Image 1: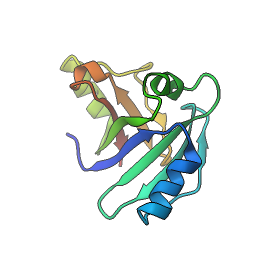
Image 2: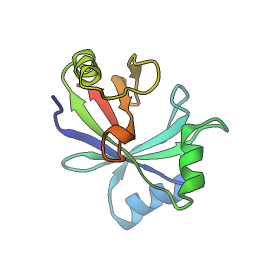
Image 3: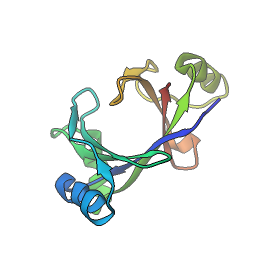
Image 4: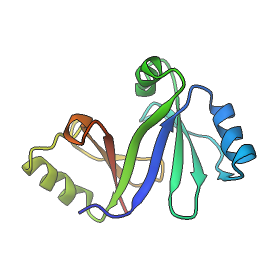
Length: 134
């Protein structure tokens, strides 16, 4: 069901420092910051030859990233994102197998302009999983 790894998301306490680290220290191509109000985050994508790193920074006081950063003040890996061909079919198969889909179970549009869903970390070895339709 899952396809290639689309990205690994890292929550950062300082977006500019995260950008500088990847761009200036590691020499990576880094996108411009992009606000995603529906998800409560500002994102930046670090382009790699085989995948992307997504830097997540809280957008507003109600950002879901705030709680993560309170527990992990230095930041850290927040989630992994896998591609799927049909997000609704993937959702239905996961639900039938007992996996929990976060939110109302309906896909939202993600930072790449494509439908996404998040899966409960307790169902995937403590890892928050995002699925993105390709």
